[in-house]
Length: 288
Image (cartoon, rainbow, N blue to C red):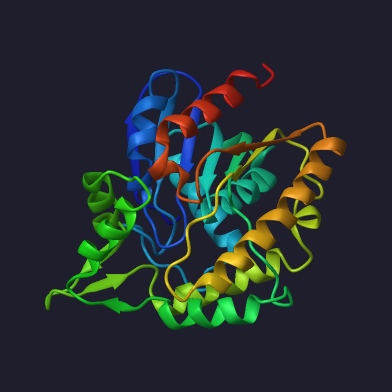
């Protein structure tokens, strides 16, 4: 049994389990969790190799799902709606797929907040991959946290929230530098898993999903950094194709609901109130 780091926000009502994105931590959920506890019991978990959770090698989705199940069992969670942002959204879908009929830590439903990826053969994926591989698990300079705060404030994220989440997502080193997480070997394995899962696209990935699933797509794109206009074009094209796939799924699959939110991919940091409202509304509408 491997237990992951978790934080119990308390609250009373239907159980929610919150999962964060790649390179992030459960602290990303602090603002939304504070709102959700008004009508839910809320537990957030650091994914393996992230935040304060132990490393995992090889980093595979089945192993991650198993560790989350162990952790929820240890916290006495019998049934939950699993909510994930970005990478956490992918894991939420896979957790529910594996644990709908489980004796304990069952998934009642899942929410995927902008958690999509592309296959290796997707046009432009090789260029994006080069940048991801270059920065995966890097040791960042002493000014790393200040830089993260500055970048986040550009998107309307409060500086105190940006600082707290940036510090929770990296490990300080004795010389003043920062170890970004997950470390390099795990990050490379993680990317391999995403390429495997999305090799055929979003629609095939969601084949066989027969539990209630809410999929939320970002309604706005992140503004490009100088010199990264090509990535903005890549992201916009990919988002449009995902939107078309999701529309088709919503038309033919009664268990899958699709929504958009007026935010960028950083939605749970930018607009925690809107994210909490979407999640709460979905849970209220679940059968029984």
